[in-house]
Image (cartoon, rainbow, N blue to C red; front, side, top):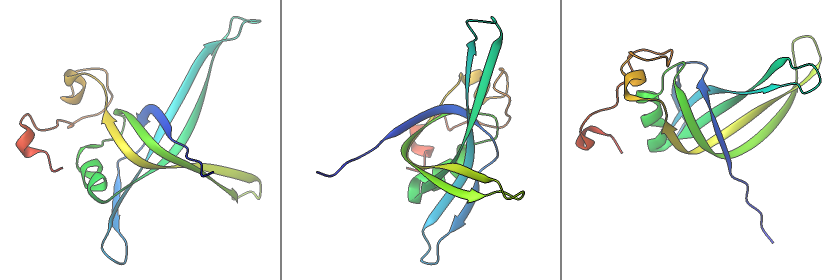
Length: 136
């Protein structure tokens, strides 16, 4: 029986997207997303947090949309297939990266955030008001 895994993350974009093209001209857009968990330790009542970074790749039309609208700091939901790559870091220690191939991207936050008037932490993100202007 074949299997299938689908992962959904919600976090903040860590860097502006980078667009590139494969040798055959297929667009690929890459950016990072930080997913932060916060909790209170039951024994010490201390607030704790853990951030996990994902490298996100979007392909074809979704790549073009992400390149246009994704900005550093914006809240985002990304769904797709995740893979893990192991490597040795610069000090020779084993490390790993989480890579998410996006199948769906949702821009989160309020309209005030998107227009730079809220607490979103990013500027100049304003999707078109008319659906005719959306490139997908």
